[in-house]
Image (tube, rainbow, N blue to C red; front, side, top):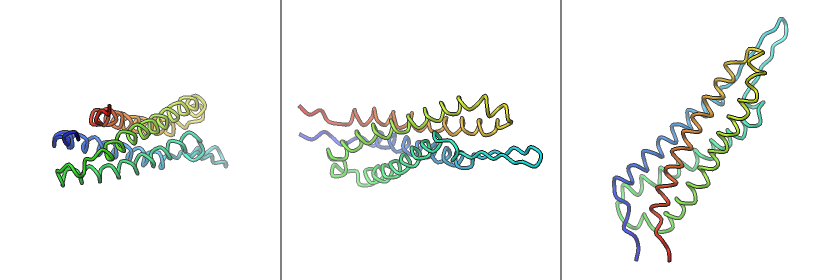
Length: 167
């Protein structure tokens, strides 16, 4: 016997969390990709970009993967809300949501952790040379990615409750 389809309030909660995830990831990617600082010392000019830090490159990849998955899930969630029938909430979608949310939440968590770690390690050296703005933007971007992870982790828990128990 198939489980009853999720209630409208559950679907709306899922949609709100997915939109929040997308917003956090979008703002995070904007901050990250515009993170550049320049130090002028006499005739020399030193420029540091997010591309110069491998952990930030990993964070960028995590954000892009998270955004692609979130866009797909927003479309599927809107489809579920509009159709309001059991056809769009089959076991296949529940399993996809369950495993997808788990995998994406781990990708986002590792991206945020890598960025926090790299930023923390670079902070003393970069602050010494006047790149405080670069460090601050790194922390801001990683913090927003972490908030995206929190939303996805909540979705992961919700999707585990929605998954029917197979005996």
